[in-house]
Length: 247
Image (tube, rainbow, N blue to C red; front, side, top):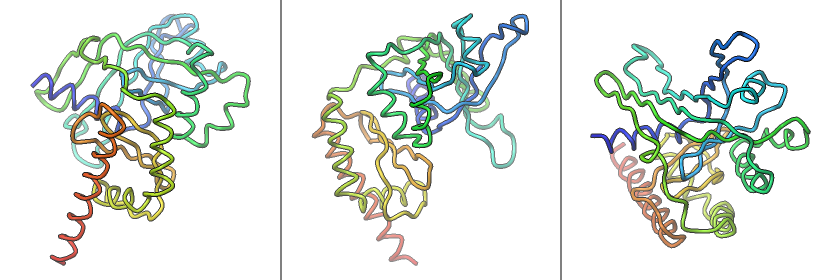
C-alpha cells in the first residue's frame, strides 16, 4: 500500500504543471505566504522554478529557505476532499550557474512562454530539495513519505542522448504521439510534440498544454525507451481501431 501511495504521489506531481508554493513571509512576521507557480520535476524528485527576484516568494526564500509546494487534482464537481493532493516540503535554493543551461532548456521546452524570462537579469532557476512528502489520495489514504523514499536514481543516459530521442520523436513520429495522446487524454492533434522525457514517462505538448504519459515500466536505457514508445503506440492504435469497429 505504501509503494502504491508513493507511485500515486509521483504521478500526481508529473501530471500537473502548477502548484501552490508556500514560503515564510519576511515582512508579515512569519505568516505563511502562498503563491501559484509553474514547476518542473526531474527524475530524481527535485522540483524547479524559474522565478523573478522581485517576486514575493523569492524575497521570502532569500531570508528563509524553508518552503513547500502543494499540488492537487481540482474537482470539476463534488467534494474536493475526495481527490488526491500532495505537499512537497523542503528547502529552496538557487541552482548553481554551471547547471542552469540544460535545466532552463528543459523548462522552456515545457513552458515556451518562459523563453523571454531568460533574457531578464532578475530571473533565476531555483530548486526545491524535498525533505518530506505528505500525500492524501482521498478519505483514508493518508501518508507521510520520507526523503529516501521520494528520491530516485538518476537516469541512465546523458543529455545528448535524451535530446536525440526527443528530436527523433518530433521529426519522425508525430503520428505515433497523436495516437497515444488520443488514447490517454482524448485530445486530437495531428502534430503534437514531445516536450520532456523521463525514465518513467514523457510529456506530449498540444495546444500549449503538457500531457504526461507513463511508461509501463521504468526505462534504464535509450533502447528501453524506444521499446516502451513502440508498445504504447501499438496499444493506442489497437485500442482506437477496436473502438472504431464497435461504433
